[in-house]
Image (cartoon, rainbow, N blue to C red; front, side):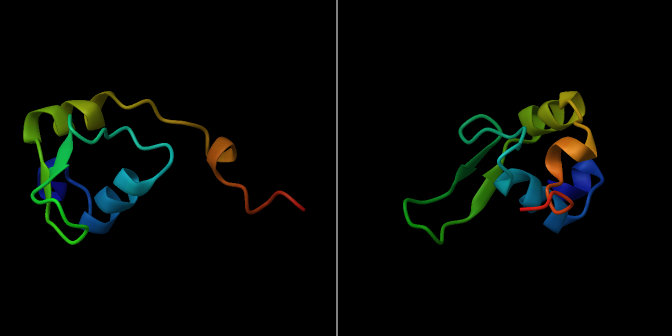
Length: 69
């Protein structure tokens, strides 16, 4: 899926795990089995559409490392 989207595999997985992920389980991806170590399967058409139409956010809205405690 990463190759189809033109991004690195780790970038795709990081996007999927993010709290701000555009990807939805059951629509864009699914698991091949019932266990926690089953394979991830992507639905090519919906994932490509989701990625293409995802809204970008300002870096300041996402990055919190610069904010003091």
